[in-house]
Image (cartoon, rainbow over all chains, first blue to last red; front, top):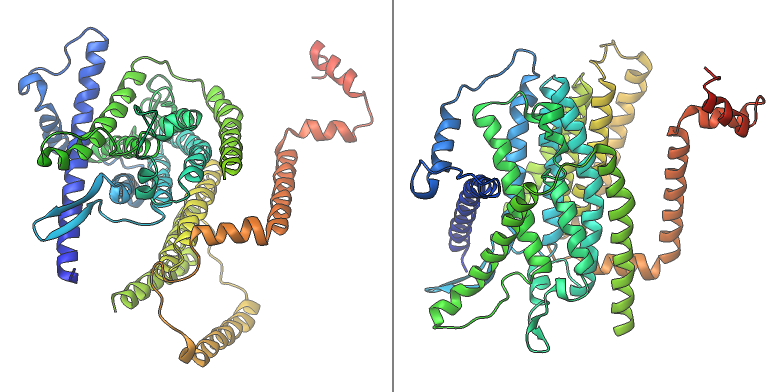
Length: 345
Length: 190
């Protein structure tokens, strides 16, 4: 492949992935409003388009035309930089996620992934760990006590739960023997006893899956761990002083992070794009991506479902749960997995 | 060619970040410059083919340690530094010392220029598996001893950061712990 083709294909893939991601972000907001409404016996958005499907566009237009307030007491350079940092890292982390296998389009072929790095998982963890700065700097530069408290809570929570999140993945890494997301998914192909898929969640990593899921909710600041923006205590937490597009950027960052975390859960525990393949050849080519999207959608729905079902933790409960329950469980899972793998070898 | 351009680009960012770290008078700005230095160093490692080291650099230093730095600065609400003229000794010894050090490094590098080769991602020995084999097989004992050392440091930090009464009670020749507890329970110690 010549360098020009490579660059053109890369640009097309990047644009496609970012486009799909941003659309997914917009429609997960719609999903959240619709599902929460039905959980509470309401209708949710119905006016703009059929089933309120054009609501995200209307919201986007509203965000653009709202007044962009900059309070005189903020520290301007960081106040402006913070939402940009948050959204940039949230979108960048999707770059190493594989969506499917090798595809051929005419004379060219490519993996359904922007770039295949052999330390893919570490890259995702690294980029998401940098996302904390957006929240922390937003809170500090706003020069407002609610913002600062929200930012401190968010940073402490994200740093704490990152530990158990990272450790819960070690079991999967031991099973696959690789840090490449593609290898991890390939290791999950096939079935047990003819019908149970060999996904990691059914293959000894059930505990790790639940640790990952819990930590991921805390990492993305979602209920029941949404203390950084607990409305009843902190107004809106770190984004209290933000309006219009700057606020929308935090919103986009949160939902983009949710999508990334859902993709990662799919790849690591639910076998990525593996699933029953049938039908004519054209359908067979599309099926893996469809399976991947369905699994991601399941996690997005779970996010919303949990948010409107569970109450919020108290702050000391949150920290105690992270350090005294999840961390020992994650370490126990590593020891168990390593023992099993070593005994089998 | 692209490799060299990227290397120089990130090198320039790294040096600029380091200089900015010293020039800025507000601790938050300095801490952010340090993050830029660390992130661009990670990019340099990546360009040198050490992808695992690059990832660890970002996750551990830029993503975890610097967040704690930032939290500390925010909590202490540290203000701007005062500007001073700088000391005469620093100027007299520091500037020549820095020049000599830079010349030494440059001289060593130029002397070895003929034996250097260019590398690319994946070309060098240093994949996660190789590093793991070194840490958990060849250097297992030093690795474990280091982890014990870190554990001791953490315990020390916990002891130092715990409530001062807990330490003061041990050096105190007055009532024994049991009596203190009773005093606290009856509210007589205040």
